[in-house]
Length: 112
Image 1: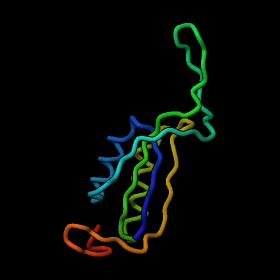
Image 2: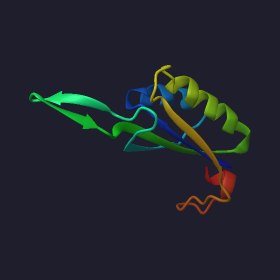
Image 3: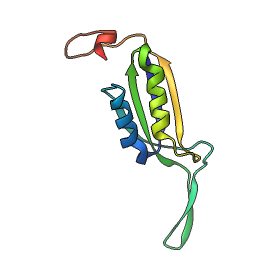
Image 4: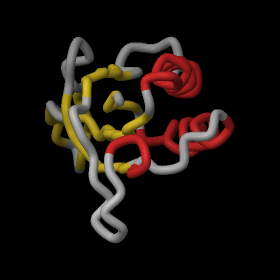
């Protein structure tokens, strides 16, 4: 099993969710996040005063999938989230040693 974490732009969430649904990924966790990378934030004008916005709004997606569809999942997220502009985000893939569905006691592949 693999855990795939993706940091994406918030307005791309619906497109990514649809792309994951199309390849058969049923469960995702979404967290609102703030951060920056090479983008380094931007300046805004508010009531005549200019100020720097260091941390930009992002969305963090987490999904655990079987090894067989991990690569397709990464490709689907990347294709749906890409705008071609700086700040599109990152995808991280980590191995998962185990999983347990609390309600039924199912383990590992059965739990996802």
